[in-house]
Image (cartoon, rainbow, N blue to C red; front, top):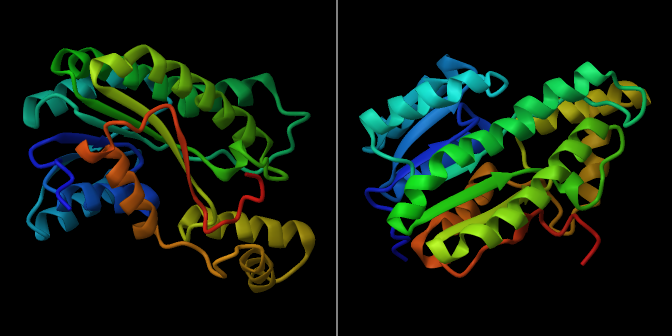
Length: 261
């Protein structure tokens, strides 16, 4: 299936590894030019090297999403080297495990800036040219915690939830301009973030990490953690020309983990 991404420019945030790296490589394999953004420049460079080795086109940007002043110069660099952004994939790092109660106002502000305001600011910056071209894709990767809040992830559950309301509202504003806006959320996909969360839970509960992973696996109908490539394949379709009638949606890639309909 031709996804119609050849020659498109995609900006993938958090693309130094994990879900973002898999998405960047998959979009590149479909012919898109990729701006690989990550707070860790070495990790971004590694993703770019993999893309170029496979015959794709990509550039790396060191991008701290908490620094909103970086939005304009980074987007200018992308435009100069690759052209205007056609596909934006928003992926932010997650905050540390916390209770919902008892967190300082400074913590809430810090992670709101890096996880929410950054996504909104970057999306606002790329939207005008998407609307001019009558084609664009804004995809935000969140967490299964926005549907079924995950214990001890109070900051993450709360802040990521706000992106659902923003995304749905934005979809209604730009749909007639050929721009789709969707949320894709992973269940337990095997990344460093999931390994970290399993390790933290094991420490809290005084259990072996293997026991925590086994219990999590038992709760997933397909009986295993997901592979980042499986997630990336879904995101690539959402980004494609084929998905032009898909907007304002929340797509779960969770192996059936989330119990609600």
